[in-house]
Image 1 (cartoon, rainbow, N blue to C red):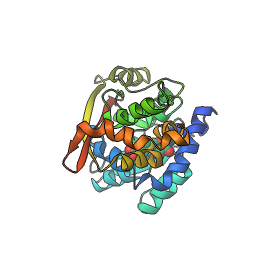
Image 2: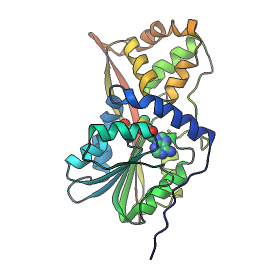
Image 3: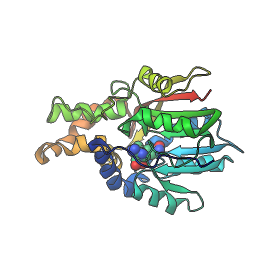
Image 4: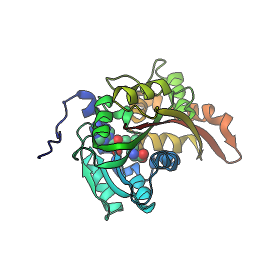
Amino acid sequence: MEIIVPTTVEDHPYREFERVGWERAASSYAASFEAITNLFAKQLLAAVGAGPRIKLLDVACGSGYMAAMAADSGAQVEAVDFSPNMVEVATRRYPRLPFRMADAEALPFADNTFDAVVIGFGVHHFPFPLRALAAARRVLRIGGRVAFTVWAPVEEHLFQKVVVDAVREIGNPTASLPTAPAGAICEIETCLGLLRDSGFVLPPPRAETLTAFVPIESALQLIQLLTDGTVRMSSLIRSLPQEKRALLPMAVEREMERFRQGDVFKVPAAAILAVGVKA
Ligand SMILES: C[S@@+](CC[C@H](N)C(=O)[O-])C[C@H]1O[C@@H](n2cnc3c(N)ncnc32)[C@H](O)[C@@H]1O
């Protein structure tokens, strides 16, 4: 029997905003923001039991490092991202791994193909995250696991908060991150709701907050890293008029001061890890 796999997604301005942003960020991602998402990758892979003989799909794989970690653990890996530039970077870095261009909402794989699907810091970038999780569920075999990470609320995710607060202080008192049409995805309850609503049922899906301390040398380094390697924070920073932007490093440094440890700042980054099983 022929298996029909969806290949197209609904046009949406938010998808376009993200696509343009990731196309721009792709060339610097591996040298910038990857160092932050990487801090949570081991736990994400452990949550789906990545290892020998596991067929694993990395969705929104970015520069490809997590797919490479999974392959090193013995897993049989496929990886997709909707940004052609990201796929090119990942393929150049890990030429033996099969990276493909695909949207998370239209995965180009047959039903019941994988034992595990991981989505590292992707779900909050999708215009319709429920559709993406339903797609992940479709390609999982019965008993297969999905795990995803998103950033925790800004009050807990201080790595983001130090910059958001500085932007608010110097230029835009109501500044906030651009949000997908589905709304913010940063609370444990929202993540669990997405898992339940996309059909992950047994055993009960679970979610927890993880914290890592990011060593940062200076406010300038943090601003550069976010400007080059992200889409939403980058757009927030770049929304400042030029004369205000010059004030940003000093304002961020003031916010970071409480995290100083000798010559570096150890700034807490907080993520939610959510796990579901296809019953
Ligand atoms: C923050 S990066 C995360 C990359 C990698 N998973 C990691 O943990 O470092 C977000 C990635 O999601 C991809 N992305 C965003 N929206 C997507 C979509 N609708 N379908 C597939 N990939 C998408 C971007 O191109 C980007 O590579």
